[in-house]
Length: 195
Image (cartoon, rainbow, N blue to C red; front, side, top):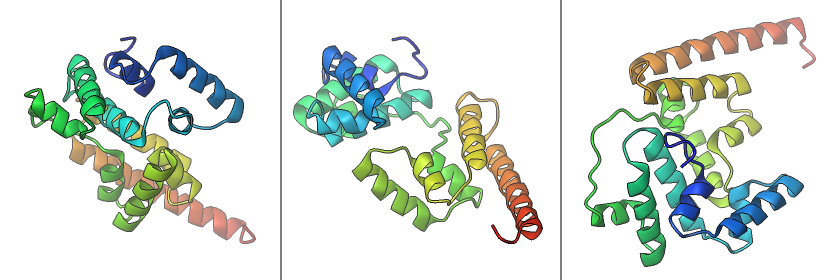
């Protein structure tokens, strides 16, 4: 695998035998031509199911969190697709039980830092499942968070996963960023009240 800590969803699906390489290449080409997300193209083309994509995204997250080894994730995805079960069930069948390592889910970080509400997260997760669009992109598009806050949250997420900072420290960093950002937006609005 090109990057074992940060595998691409398509790579996981092809290595698991759920998706053919030529179908992935075709989907990449279509996505580049149309501007659509690759996952959405894969589903719309009938190459994979929504469930396959959801399982691969979950596996990718577990690998990034250093909770699941890539090879076991691939076996789990294969079992998941073949038996039409959830990834968690497939991994359980394979004898995998997660260790208690710190995870850093984007939605959790944004809620804990006061950047979004549970309602925002719930709506965005529902939309994400339907549209196959990334959570952060939806929240920015809906003007719930700024691009700066999203980028900072993604950086915090990576730092937590890499063990550079603790989750509470990451949440504090995001909360400070949100406060600073909202103060600068307020100042801009006072300077330019027509915006």
